Length: 118
Image (cartoon, rainbow, N blue to C red; front, side):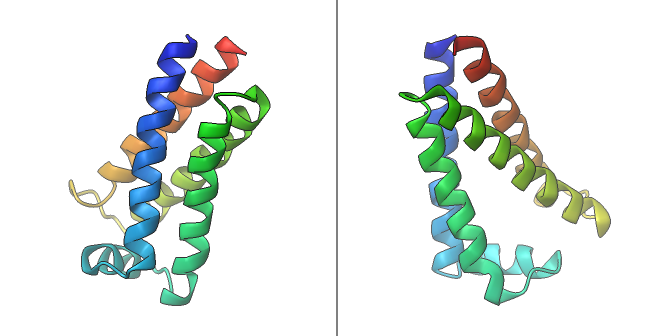
């Protein structure tokens, strides 16, 4: 199970780092999506920091199981909120709710794998 956690956590961390980067540089598509669900541009940096912390925590979880578990819980909650934000406005298209839902599924998978391999 640890090998599976390593793969999922590494891939998820890369996704989180990329997502944080797009928020920090105000990538047009990211800005449009966040604005559509009601996120103020002043909150982008805080959201990016949360994603960076989650990615770093997942990687730290390779050595310290409680950190990986805590990070996976945090990332799961973050993306559950993202899914809820898209559902709230009825954004059911493939560019709307699907990406955060997939990342949420990956975070829950990382959590389950890290708990099993602790």
